[in-house]
Image (tube, rainbow, N blue to C red; front, side, top):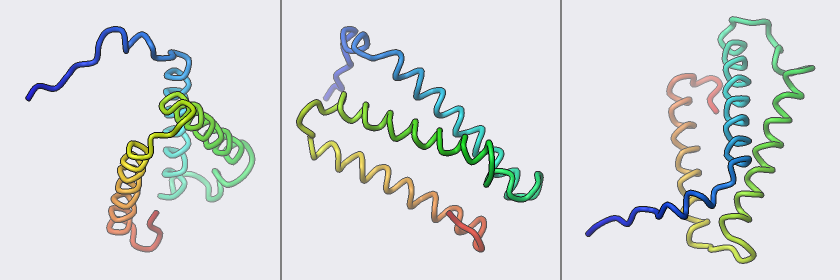
Length: 113
């Protein structure tokens, strides 16, 4: 059995601005979590990410992700959602979340995610 490859025409349907926004959001999230980890492991002042700029930055990142999820969901499904695909993706994300929780429980039992 062969696996069909996407046609060149499918690649041109991507919206570059959304891909760029996703990339920026991922970089922003990585920078915030890096700083949070530095705080958690005692390399910065306690409470650094809980107040002021860092708290605002975290809220902006979360809002950006939710906004992009809404746009992506609409672009992927149009006016009618395909439930099979939705639940498959939901199970994948949920499984990844459980795996992260289990790994952090083993690594840091007093404060796992």
